[in-house]
Amino acid sequence: MALLLCLVGVTAALAHGCLHCHSKFSEKFSFYRHHVNLKSWWVGDIPVSGALLTDWSDDTMKELHLAIPAEITREKLDQVATAVYQRMDQLYQGKMYFPGYFPNELRNIFREQVHLIQNAIIESRLDCQRHCGIFQYETISCNNCTDSHVACFGYNCESSEQWESAVQGLLNYINNWHKQDVSMRATPAFLVSPAFRCLEPPHLANLTLEDAAECLKQH
Image 1 (spheres, one colour):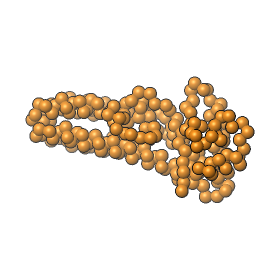
Image 2: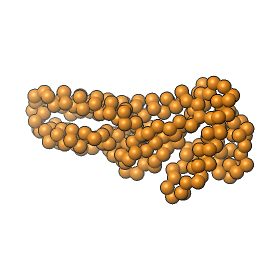
Image 3: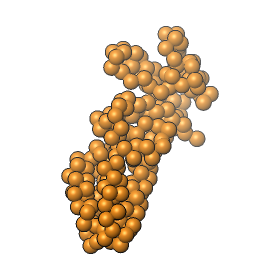
């Protein structure tokens, strides 16, 4: 079974929410907030719905519950945004709704959005299993909407030659990482993981290709 190591290229700062990073988010949600008072017969629905829309981004980050950083590709972010905006636009096309209906529908769309984002992030990480060695893909950090990248080490190698090449690529990646400015670089996950002590800085100086391969095969 293929295993993977995930290395995060950017450290999170402020919580914004993945959808917040989409180019049409501000325009769309500004419209939704300004027209919320036209969607329910019951005045009590208006502040509840307004709060849901205002807190949408922060609540998204709270509900993701991911063990990996929230880094999403632009392609998948576009797919999530298209699905969410379509549901929201359909909801806003209707006339006034009966009490309670509108905020409940907003909650349903919110939960669906969280599920879509979770799947999008996890699917990209699992795709690493189809690779042998270091593989990187461009992402957007859901925390601060900056460009980022995720680098993975995939174990899905089909021959000893591919495996040796993959391990050599990993060693080169580590060496290049150590040459970066300490104040600017993000720490790769495998350098701090207890499961990979042989790849920590104190051992790197004398680490051979064979030792690295043996270390990784144990996991």
